[in-house]
Amino acid sequence: MTLEFYPATAGADHVVGQYVQQLVTFDHNLQQVLKVETELNEKDDFESRYIASASTNLIRAFLYSWTQGLDEPSSASLSHWLASDAQVTLAEDQIISLSDYKAQIKAQGLTQIRRVIKNLRISPLDKQRYQVDFEYQWSAINAQGENEIANIGVSMRLSVIDGKVIMQVYTEQYLAPKTDLGAEVRC
Image 1 (tube, one colour):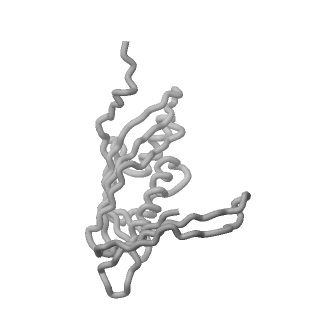
Image 2 (cartoon, one colour; image 1 turned 120 degrees about the vertical axis):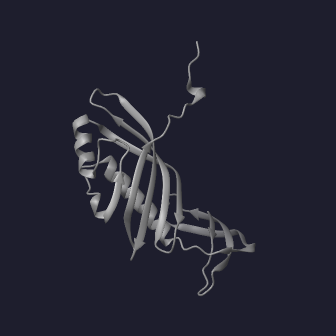
Image 3 (spheres, one colour; image 1 turned 180 degrees about the horizontal axis):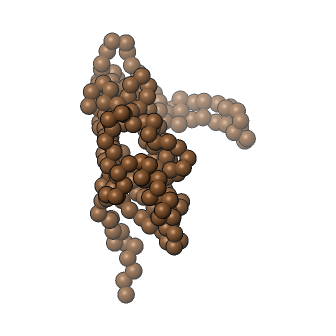
């Protein structure tokens, strides 16, 4: 097991990173740790600026819940994460709200909707606001039983207030398809 961590010191905004590598031995049923041996325990030769990870971890957890709500629109209400003046722009022009999204999915007969998050970037704008950019690799089974796929670029502006993520802006746009030249069959 390898750990990399930056121990925070009260009142300091610079920290020294530390790397610990340990060999952990379990019994055959993986129910008990038999032995822990530290193989490496070293500190960086330089200081880094300390950045708390609590908010970015909240944002990551939020993204997984939000994505599940988009994949399974009947299972969750997405509106409880939206600010009262939130701006939501989905990739489909005719869908202007989250309730329209649910109706459109049902009308198209899409099932097994799945989004995979790729190229996630979380950038702090200030102490409470964050810019989040990533791509969805989207797939679904249409009413004819065919697999539909798309790449969607997403840009969000979020706030983390009292341990709760609030979305101010959500914008999607279709991205150009990515071609895997190695997957082409040549005759």
